[in-house]
Image (tube, one colour):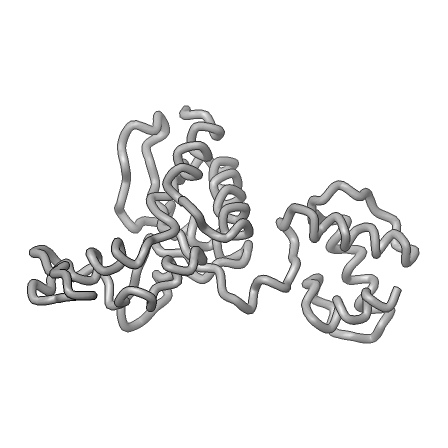
Amino acid sequence: MIALQTLKKRSAERMGKVKPIVKEKALLLIARAYEEKICVQISSGYRSLERQAALYGQGRKDYVWRGKSYGSAGPIVTNAKPGQSVHNEGRAVDFFLVTSDGSKALWNVDNRWKRVATIAKEIGFLWGGDWSSFPDYPHLEWSEASYDVLRRGDKGRAVTELQRTLCASGYHLKIDGSFGPRTEAAVKQFQEDHAIEVDGLVGPITQSLLSRH
């Protein structure tokens, strides 16, 4: 089976200059899927406005942007003009599956593909396959509203600071920068102790209460 690090390396190269949290979550998705023996790669991430113009121009032969023709033959692949796609903001990636040896791309939207989409949604992504008007099955995007919410599966400096605050408030857990079951349990206990919704998510209300400790 292809090495996990190879999948991550290939994907990191194709993501380009996406937001740090988007890269972090995309690599987490690859690792989570790999645990279930599903090999995932990221095909694209950040797009320049020129690249977006070229994609929008596919299937629209008369399309001109900034005085240059970007129209080309082929099927329409996007309805987003330059500046209208979250890819232009570095907030989205597209994924595909590969064979276990990593030699062949798999684009069938089957149960394994949908399982990857489910994992992606569990860690905070929105899935284009849920769109009713123009389903985009490879598409995953990170919403602006999700930036300030910490949840199980998150890793990094923000989680480390959360754990330090919880420990300082009397909740015993390991400070390792990984939002696992024990951190989630501590968050839920904190929420219960402060009579707010107990969901294990560190959103604005929970963060506001934590900041007072």
